[in-house]
Length: 354
Image (cartoon, rainbow, N blue to C red; front, side, top):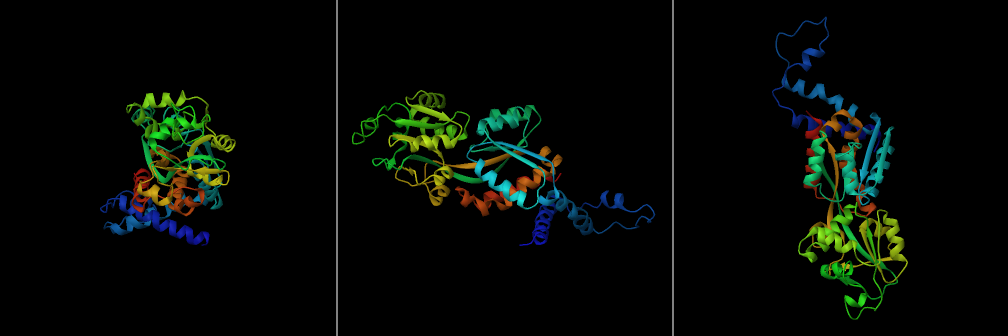
């Protein structure tokens, strides 16, 4: 598809959003303001369709096409969202974006803090939903976070390919593995009487938060703080915000176990083995249906004022939403439903069209 055809398609899509957001009775200022001074004012009002179609049609293309915007875009957050965001950055730049797009992998919590507390970024990437306290922090600095779901991740629980005794664990067994069990035989007597070597994302990671919420909290009286403490106090535990460190750690011993986003497992599946959870394997079908117990949504967050003041940010988000499903499977994640993706597009449209 040529760039001209892509641009025309982009114009049609954007125009449809603009038309949907505008009131059909608008016949005022823009027409008379643009009339040349030497031309006599019309004695009758212009047709409403003229005002709606002609005036806005050129502007959105000029503002939001990748090859027509420039400037800085700063995003930070989830290490799980990072490989998908990097792929979309590459595609965005291939389509002509000439500005500077920076994406930092620092964990969901740290990314939301940078967006909501420090106000340093344009986009926060997260592998969990934003919390009420974080929304309050955003409000305190004049930002109202807008949520865009861009995919689904299945969190993979992995062991070394040299591990020949574990293929499936229950949620309850997984909680014990990451807290009270010392040796593998403490979980199942038939497993080796060898120490469990635990690897986990760091506490700033949305992956850590999600694991605590789904696995550790139910095993600790539905107390999230107790669940988090149980994990952090477990013996032979290594925490890291770098998923590659976790991969290398698990690869190094048949008695090691770790967890991270499915994409990192796919990149290293020759050296790793993904476990079934409650007899359900992590696949596209089980993640989308929710049958796999450790599937979760992936989000981007931004703010309407940012999108209106920085057309390059609006452009990247729009490009992301319209192209993510062409790339997401290759990265190792699963697409959201058409309805969920349309919700994100509608939220974008409401934000950029005043």
